[in-house]
Length: 225
Image 1 (cartoon, rainbow, N blue to C red):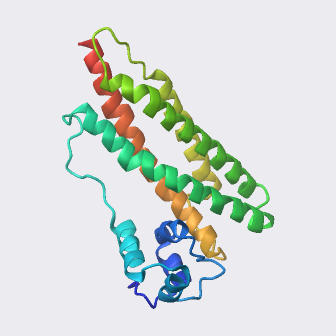
Image 2 (cartoon, helix red, strand yellow; image 1 turned 90 degrees about the vertical axis):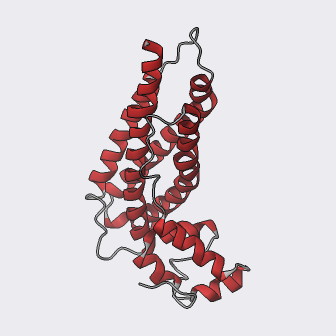
Image 3 (tube, rainbow, N blue to C red; image 1 turned 120 degrees about the vertical axis):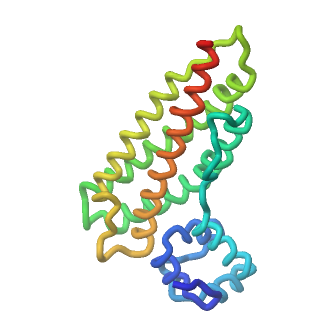
């Protein structure tokens, strides 16, 4: 689907669920108000249509830093990359996903009264774990790593344990969503939530790999040398 200023918001959300990140950012209703062209919605909200289209394109085409050897990059650059590429987007993404999870559980809970409420509880647990984890990394762990000296002892075990908790929550979310298979009768919010959870899982897998298998291993290697 080619996205233009005349494309209807609901159609964009249905064909490109990750575009809802941009819609949520600008409080554009892509569910109940999905029959309105993007240009009209932008005019109503005082937004520049071309800028919103550019944001959507960036979200849909965003890629990682392929080719970067993080095992050789200075630690300060690796830490900055983790914060910029993973922590900052998570702080935007988690509230967006929670709002959709609450709405799906509330509106459609009668369609799956066991799994949808548990999906919401599991996601809320995951969000709490991630936000606490990121705060402790940024306020305690990362400064310790960057100011490391021979007299310092940087412990990463608790953070590795946190990652295990996150992994178990992600596995439960995948099970509760049938591997993120969107139900046929799902509305745009439900569809975007399932796609968003799948994208969250993929991003967290990359994020945790970079910390457990690169950053933490480098820290342990320095301390043991």
